[in-house]
Image 1: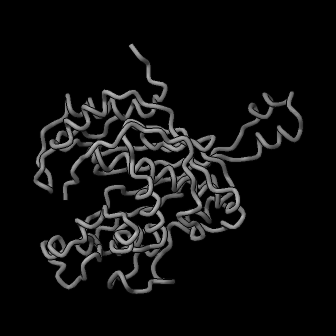
Image 2 (image 1 turned 90 degrees about the vertical axis):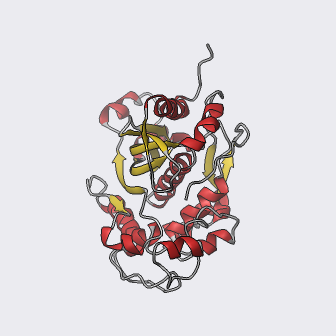
Image 3 (image 1 turned 120 degrees about the horizontal axis):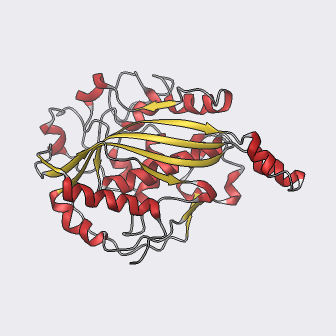
Length: 321
């Protein structure tokens, strides 16, 4: 039997298989139907040495992941901004028909309401529409996370939440990836001692850089389409925040609530599970841009380079809206 060299991706595939084999049949909001398990084992991904958990057993839409995350960070809630960049993942939820069915008839097409980016950067502000300038309004959770990492990295409250129940009726879709917590690890004395035979310069380099890890809780987990996207997105967010606070990366840990496979994704996932995972690629911030990026808002799409991504071909799965 061939042994996978990528245990983290294999764990994702094994979970998909377990859900298909053992999951409970459940109806869902979209009418498609799912097989579901509640609170399965966590998925863990090592982000050190620039490793980037972009699944290899099918091609994942990396352009969409980067653009969407930058859109979140900008606090934007206008799906048309993404569509203009060729990222159409929010078009279904921002369509005229979908918004009208929610009773949001006053909203223009593409206005998703106070979804992720608004909650990250303007939590508690009064939402009017996606064209309003909310500068200085609400609580900037993302900037608060960065401030705490810089000033009090042992804090147990370094959390960013998109879960704001009073705003749910205004959203095209309540958040699936609900909140994330950051954790900083510092090299300990035993690590320093183990490096005692190295040069002082090398030892300082090894022992002085803390590592930033991120844990995500996701309430609703579309294993076929959504989860591969979410894994890469929060890994990228961790790398971006780590750069801004001058840390290395540790792990991305994914805690899943309702982990489900849509019934019309089963055959596609079975095909994907026949493939042996390859090594993850690396994601690097381009050398010429590193010094210019001082804040989380300085990042641009062109700043990132994915190196060594050699996935199997794409597998088509329909998005349920």
